[in-house]
Length: 80
Image (tube, rainbow, N blue to C red; front, side):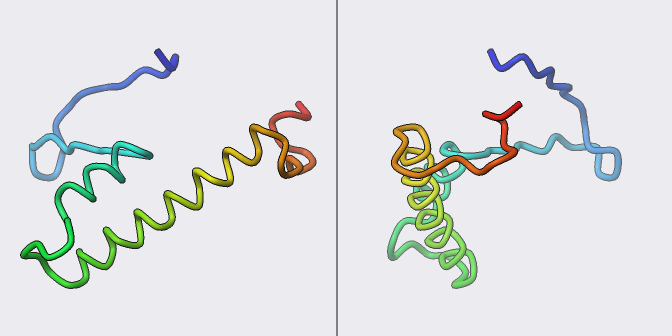
C-alpha cells in the first residue's frame, strides 16, 4: 500500500516480536488502554493524555497545510 517493505522478525536481544503502532492508530490505542479513571501508573496516564492532545494539534496543522490555510515551508517536499 505504501511502497515500503516490512521485515517481520524477532528481537535479537530477547527473541520476541515487538509490535509498533504509529500515528493515528497509536493515539486510538493509547486512548483505549488509558481511558480516564483507569487503573494505571500516573506517568502512563499523563503520557497517553499528552499524546491525544499533540495528535489533535498535529491533525489541525495537517488540515491547514492541505487546505492552504497556512503556507508550506520553503524547501519542503512541494518544492522538490
